[in-house]
Amino acid sequence: MSGYEVAQAMRSLASGDDILLIAYSAYGEPEDVKRAKNAGFDVHIVKSSPIEDLLHAIMQAPRAGRPS
Image 1 (cartoon, one colour):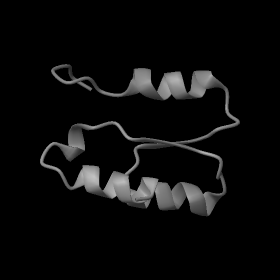
Image 2: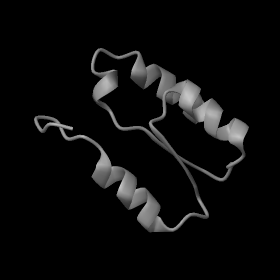
Image 3: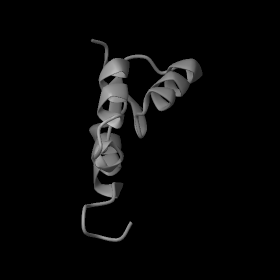
Image 4: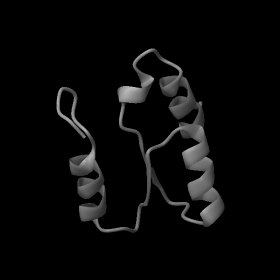
């Protein structure tokens, strides 16, 4: 199962909209970002990006029980 298929399967769950999905990929072309979004990922980060980009995406995600 590819990461795209995993994202689609997770989004199909009853609680799928409450899950933060981050694509952390070596592929960073515009069509790769679009494919990740279409599969259900919230964020697409290229692996060569600073780790702070990943941490920022996690910290900006709404938390259960907290207003977004």
